[in-house]
Amino acid sequence: MRKSGIGWFAGVGLVAMLLAIGNLIYTCTRNDGEKYAQQYIDESEYVTLHIPKGKMDVDYGPESIMTGVLMNSTKRIRTDSLAFYDKYYKKYFCVFVIEPDHRKTVRQGEIVVKDIRYRKTIRARINKYELNSPRYGSKANPVPVLDFDYKIAHFQNDKNSKYYEYAFSRPAYYKRAVELYLTYMMSKEEFKERFEKE
Image (cartoon, rainbow, N blue to C red; front, side):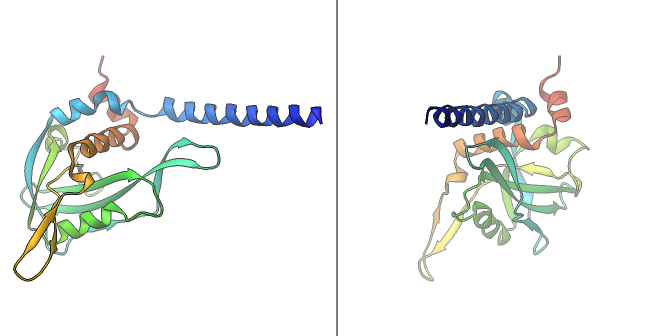
């Protein structure tokens, strides 16, 4: 009885140690997005983007980004995307909806696509470096859009419609999206070049 109790505690200790090591690896290999999120936001500006009719690339891919290790699963975020070409800027842009991976909830990306699909323009907040850099704007590396004027109309009847704001249209959501984008989506090389210059 005593040996099995010691074995149980040793097993729990080993699992806890492996989880700690796994989370340490994820912490050490990612960028420090939280530290530079406000700088990224401060270096952004509002621009009007032009939505091409019927020419958007929507991705609700099942892929997600692992951000940590839990007891019997992994902690993940998912990134839905909506890419399009803006003739005015002559660049590709991509709206990213970054959120925790909750399998049983409605994807916010679906709501965003419904919003954008029927509009001619959106007012988006874009990082100035990414808007002006030749590094960004190709189909392979579009300019990221992490915030825009989300408005979904719910028609009550023929004469009246009401606009609702969703959680991801709030400043706190935008800041969190920037943190996640910098931490998990931007390459380590670019992150160092842009934010960790010595």
